[in-house]
Amino acid sequence: MPKSYTPFALGFRPFFLCAGLAGVLLLAAWLCFLAGHLPANTYYGPIGWHSHEMLFGFTTAIIAGFLLTAVRNWTGIDTITSKPLAALVGLWLVGRILPFLPVSGGLIALVDLAFLPMLMLALRYPLMEAESKNNRVFLLVLALATGANLLVHLQALGITSGSAVAGTGMMRYLILWLLVIITGRIMPFFTRTGVPGVMPVSRDDIENLAVIFLFGLMIADVLAPASWLSGLMAAALAAVHIIRIRGWYDHRIWAYPIVWVLYTAYFWMIASFVLQTMGALEWVAPNLATHAFTYGMVGIFTMGMMSRVALGHTGRMLETAKPINIAFVLLNVGVFVRVLMPIVAPGQYSVWLFISGGLWLVGFAIFCVIYLPILISPRADNQPG
Image (cartoon, rainbow, N blue to C red; front, side, top):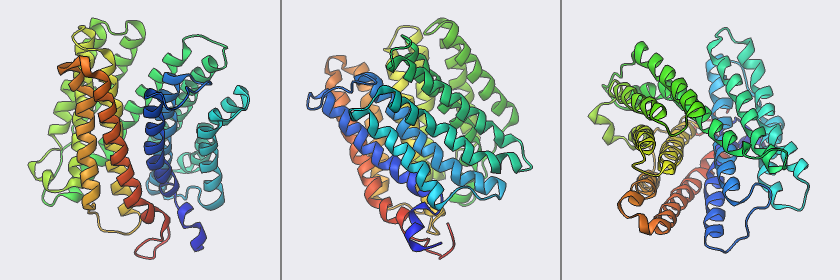
């Protein structure tokens, strides 16, 4: 592949870079709005813009980069590269910019809603042509995510009222569903290959229960949100995931930051279930569980996963640089401040919000500085990709 196309040689390169930059710019804009230095977004609304962009902007970029890379490995069939990949990245980028320009809401919705279907189209051929049918579930997830995004845009366009909350809630559960699937595949593998002598064990019954109880929680949240039933399902999920991760865990992981970062993220997912149970009992505010998942699990897990995938798929040693290890720590401290300090000192809520936001910004700024040269440079082993 010509050197000029190296940034678009494989899906993880441009999308992980976009996600890193989005992690900095989206949070910086959000904090500036909260501080009164930026006007509110008039299309989504201030709160709506933040939740939409972190779920349908930042997170979908990571999903796209991961799937466009992983599907090629799973199926042995090439996914899009070069100009088609650049066009897909451009579509994602325009979707982030348009809400700040003096254009019609219809154009904003049309462009933003087009991204996930285009990603589905890019993945359809390799997934449908491959012998294994299990991976086709990702097409269903992307289709449902498109529906969730539509619910947000219908409210933004004034067609519905209240559908945006349903759309963002649906998207959070779809991301959780993806993470349950992906962690089951990559965490035992990354642990086994990253920590000498460790042999993680996965149990089919626990894997099945993780899916069953997740569907139970989704149904409970639709029928009776923040009720004893949803609290019970969340508590059951916490128990199942504790058993699940015990089968993979070994104390030797703490010598390998590229591995332990995934385990700390998983801890925050379990914490989100515990906090959801506590929220149903009205012991804590419900949004703490949301941020334990989005900041803790999504933010930390995706940084760890992107760091590992970027090194492995550019022919480099699977050993993270010291600044990235610091970024892992900063994000963990940040989610602690964002989620637990409001319980300890609720009167200082805005202080904890800005501190945790600042730690996120610094962490993702470090990621951008370290991984920008890696993501735009040819592989270290001179192999394609």
